[in-house]
Length: 237
Image (cartoon, rainbow, N blue to C red; front, side, top):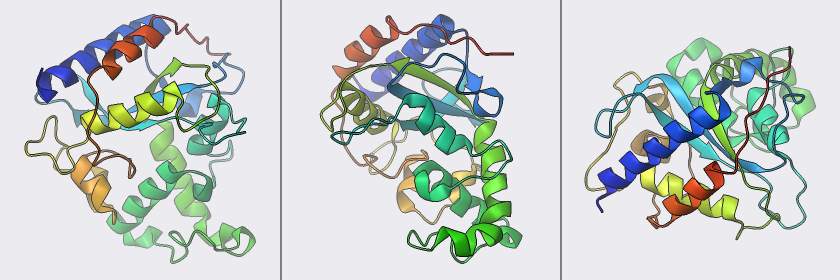
């Protein structure tokens, strides 16, 4: 099958997943009390970013998982909450590549938000927290409004986990980085075009790892299997 046909199958599975879990959620309205599975893989969409080749609807712009280092005990909600930021609107982009990439693009699009320390991973948080706060809040608002889906895969922490396998292959499938032909490319006004990261700009994803990798089409069968075992998460009032 062609990559386009595989992408069509991927989105058919996303539709099945959305129906199974009761639709997409937005992090701004989620809490840790919503009954999340212990471990899983998540898929973020973005308002204004639509599929143009594989069908109708929003396209996936970020894929991720967690707990892939030996001995890690990070739960799915822990990872999602790192991306969301704090209830007060701030956050810590040094604990989330997603936040770092989004903040970099926002600051390059809006010069008034620029903070010299943003890409300095070793900057002492105590000395930059105040100057970075406004940009952290903008990132929280941006990511918090993105629709997302998730699948439950409660396997051991490992780089060889099924979660890591699905993450890598899904990124490889959807990424346009280094591909001879783009499928469902980003819109002309996508924020990611302002990123200083070539992998983001060229892939059309808020991912910098695995965007140049190939994919194994068989991962779609695994994805379908885990979707069938994922239960709905009930939002708490």
